[in-house]
Amino acid sequence: MPPRARASRHSYDICIDRLSACDYAIVLIDAKYGAPIIVDDGSEISITHLEYRTTVRRCMPRFIFVSQATWDARNAFRKGLSQSHVSAKHLGVFDFVDEIHKSRTNWISFYEDVDDILLTLKTNLLTLDDSDFVSDLGVADGDSVKLGTRFTKTWQIRNNGMVAWKNRRLCEENPGASGLIPDQPCVPIPDTMPGQIATISVEFTAPDYSATCKSIWRMRDENNQHCLPNKIGIWCKIYASHR
Image (cartoon, rainbow, N blue to C red; front, side):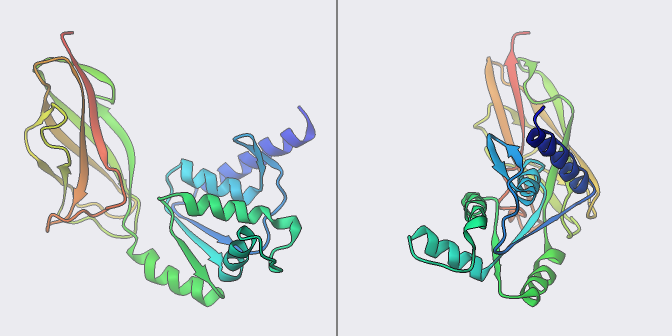
């Protein structure tokens, strides 16, 4: 194994170890990119860049801060204008920011100084509402279910934010379209504190014809408003068959 590949594997392991104990990630980006010593998806990137990609792959909540000066320099550089904030050695930071900016799951906060970062964290971190899928229990995605059979679908989701879940429900988003018939259009979500896991079950009846069925469910509050509008939701996907 060549020296660069060894360094990449070791750095990747360090990155995973660091993030394994974290619930949230704070990404700070300014004028320096770092040495591109890690091979990931066919390109050489920095450790910070890999840490960011790891948070994406693990669906970790992340707060991303880009200095206003770096953002302005990136805009000038993309327009072919001169900029002096980022040196030629660290131009990779612009590609890093572009990758973050293109993702619909990210938001970027721009800062002038540390006070801006602290204010944003105090304002948003304590009000972060987020969920994370943990596992299916019993019937799993892609399982075959006999035509017309009643079955129970059970999900486990974690309260991945800082807000307690109270008086919330899980409601079907595509009623009638999936072919599956739930006993109820909405089911209660147990009150769940941050860090805790909620177990939620829905009783379904499979259609009496062969089909691939996918029933999508999302979280709503006591006023029937979506709690996590940027989340796709969770689902029950089965194959209804004669077997």
